[in-house]
Image (cartoon, rainbow, N blue to C red; front, side, top):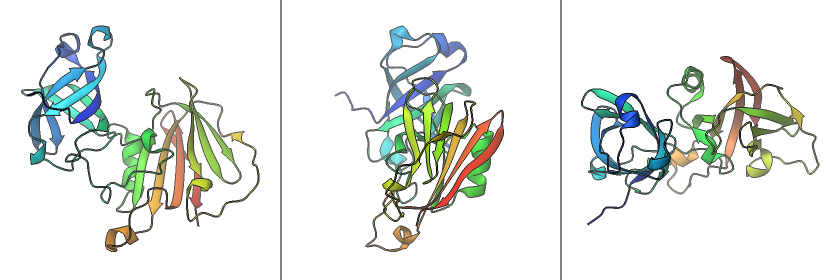
Length: 247
C-alpha cells in the first residue's frame, strides 16, 4: 500500500548528493530538535534538475511520534549518517498531525500568509525575532512564491505597504488597514510612493491581542492584528518603515 505524502517541500542539496539523486531517496530529517526521522522523497522535476534545487513531497515514516512540529516555511536539515546532504523548506502540509497548532504559531494575515517565512539562517531575521517575537507577536521574512526575496517597496499615507517582486513582478500587500477588523479605515484614495529605489528584503512583525490564548470562547483570527511593523534591509542595513497601531 502506497502512503500519501505528509508534506510538500523545496529541496536544496549539497555535495555529492546534489548530482546523485533518485526517486524514492530516503535521507534522515531533523524534524524537530534532537529527533531524526527518515522520509521518502518524490520529486516533481527530477529530470530537469540543474542546480540541486527540486520541488516534491516527503512521506515520513512515523509522523504520529512527532506531532505539531511543522509549519509552512520551516527548514528541515537532511542527513546521511553524520553528513549533511541539504535541507527541505516546507511549502504545504497535507498531514494535519504534523501541523503546528495555530495558537502556538498563528501565522500572519491571510493576504500575506503564503509569503511569510521563518528564515533561521538570516542574521537580520534572527535579530528581529529576538527583539519582537513573543506569544502574541510574530516575525517573518517576506518571500515571493517564485522564491525571490528582493522587492521594490511602495507606501501610502493610509498607511499601507506594498511590495513588487523584482523577479516576477507580483505585487504583494504587506500591510493594509482594509483587511483588519479592528482598524479605522478612511474612505479615500491614497497615492503610492516608492520607499527606496533599490531592491530590498522585507521583514514584518504582526501583533495580536492575547484573548485567544486564555479565553475558550475566543477563536484566533489571523487578520485581527493590533499592531504592525515593517522593516526593509539592503546590504545588511535594516530600516523600519512602518510602526502602526491598527485600532
